[in-house]
Length: 286
Length: 298
Image 1 (tube, chains in turn purple, yellow):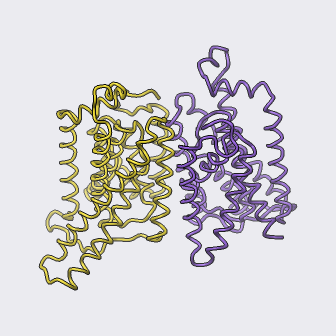
Image 2: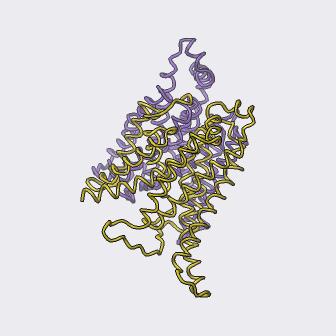
Image 3: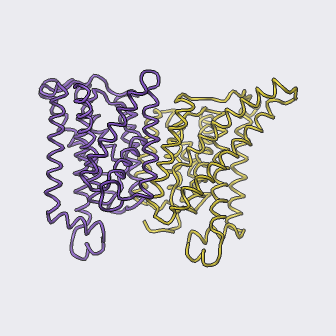
């Protein structure tokens, strides 16, 4: 039962993160933010700083959750400003650079092995309560996405994504629309990172490196861009694969888990991006 | 001390320059940067360490030959360069060529996929710890340099001059330029696209293998070492301009010296972050590179 609860919590946290990458940033703006995991790292780092360095206790720990959203919004201004001039692969370069910078920041602040023993706030001490909170956040996001499908802004994002010149002619502020969704996605990712820090009690900088970023991008391509069902299936798949590999390689062979996961998702990425761009649930290609 | 720092920085810059030249060469064919290049460098380093060790053992146990060390080093270099070229050509033929027309973003993501797979395979086979080659190096008295450093420096200078001559004077170089400027027209004029693409990838693999061998002898390698050189060389490419080989090399050497001074006076993390911040600012201000001939729309 504990195992199932733990897996479910992990699934909901990764689903929130993947939702922010797949359905908000890539889905609505069309920009391939491969280094989006940087904002996950920012959320986890800020939670660690508040609880381990500044020793916040009791209900004040909830400030970490809101603070990481605000810090993520501040840092999200970097890619949001870059889309004024850059697009396509140059945005990918910016995204990778931000990812590497944030990884170095995490190493600088939390040391090479990261924070450990991050306390949970009262009310979130059990896995069940953490799962409830993350599932509520995820349900709100899903509800938002399904209502947003019929909103005027959704049609505007489609025009902006498909034909930028046409959108400009129609008087749409292309830059404003895109930056809104980038900032929103980064804020959601920050919240997911904070939840992840509570869940795993630690912030390991190796979790935020470029290989992990590529794996999470592969999950988006696998599930299908801008599809909620794809996001759910992809994150379930990821959590299950991690669980299976972890139960096979125990103890000394634990390093094989991350490496084999990387190989599997690297192959999935190359295969799905070239031959299967819709993913399993998506309606449109990358 | 200042002179030593300059020297170390200069040789660090030479390694970055070799990778940047590889990036710039492949940029001519794919019109974007192939990020898995640095992992092929790590691969060649590992092949060199293992083959050198194995051949030395083989020769000393079965044959009584003089100059065992030199023979094993030469054979190791040859094997490493050959395996790197073969691997590069396989990746070029079966992965990059079929998807070349799908757009640069897809190429970048694919190269990241290859990079992740290669790094994970290498860390499964060779573990994550740093491996250094067992070759004993003796510095030349009087100058204070290792023979390896002089060899790499002379190789870098030669390859720069030869490459520049090839690209500017020969038909092969002109056809590379033709491919960059107008792909369709180049095919129309019956330029052998596949042959040129394989040749360019092969040259880049040769350059990269040399730097991988030298890294494995000098500092030791680990599976993720490629990421570090990838970022530095990418920064150097953007400063120097991808079409301008001399500019790239000068920028790499300056970056190497800067990194060495940063490591000495602050800490490696700070100097690396400063490099990344420079890269980010450059991407904002002048994404086409400081000394870049504009050849594609951003």
